[in-house]
Picture 1 (cartoon, one colour):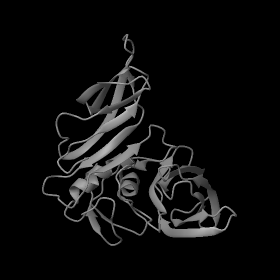
Picture 2 (cartoon, one colour):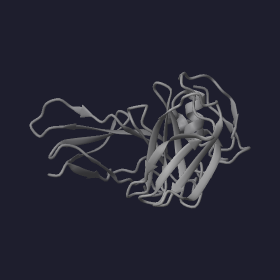
Picture 3 (cartoon, rainbow, N blue to C red):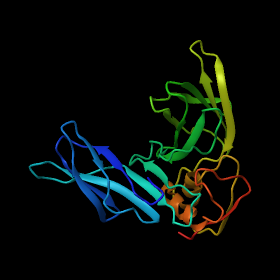
Length: 259
């Protein structure tokens, strides 16, 4: 997305499907999928500043039932005055056991020589859904304290995901990423304390929040409101402090809008 709000949106559908891209209930544009099922839309008007939830729906060339995408993209677009703040986009899967994925180019949360943790999401049945970035093809062991949560391999774009049982983990713990060589040696490691979102969800009112080590906007929204998509409300209410929505720091004092 450009600083002026011009966006390019792409996805997949059935070949020759008619696709409509929505910002909430508003239509951003319509396009026809190519013979491979791929489609690209460049909306004719810029996406205005503020918080948006973008989804798509499709219908076959001959008509029939409209199919809506299960996943959405939560998007926070800067105002013209926010010259230092890029747009922030997060892919939000419909399945709460799948991790959310930060789509904006700069990482957050746990940077470490190519290793990054982007999101921590509390799924159903007391599970954790993690997502981050590493070198393409990198193999990772992921630990909570000394408990192995599982292994993951970064894809060709350098993205990795892991869904693991929460088990008897404490409310806050050290999360560690170990990148492995072909012979199993640890060649890169980063670690940081995290506070995962609660298993049970439910919005409640809050006024203030002091950022702790390992926090990111998605995690705070999930913890406070029970829904990570509401990170855009926190970002909008604190733009005077958040120059880059992917980079927040321990000790920052945020005002949280009431839910």
